[in-house]
Image (cartoon, rainbow, N blue to C red; front, side, top):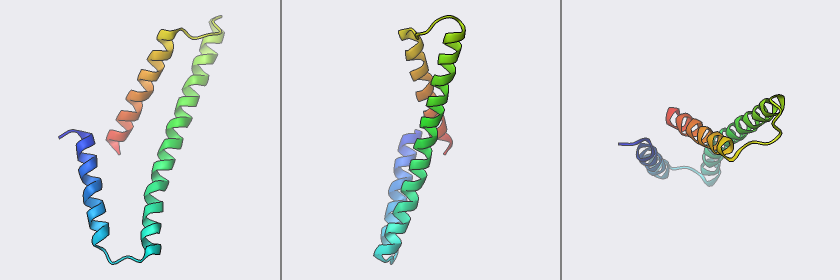
Length: 92
């Protein structure tokens, strides 16, 4: 079973469990906010890492006398960012 399927099944099981609880609307909203909050934190962290990587690449490029990145460099950075995000998601 791959990670995406496992995560999907885990979320489905969690949802079913939460629906079975006798929670007030306020309690349900609180739980939903906690789930969304962790997602927002993770997205913010990923964006920060991407911005830092871009800043680092720009500074390296400028120190080498190149003011622009090649298409291959941009594609490689995108590939590395996606790989890092997948690895981070798999660890969570």
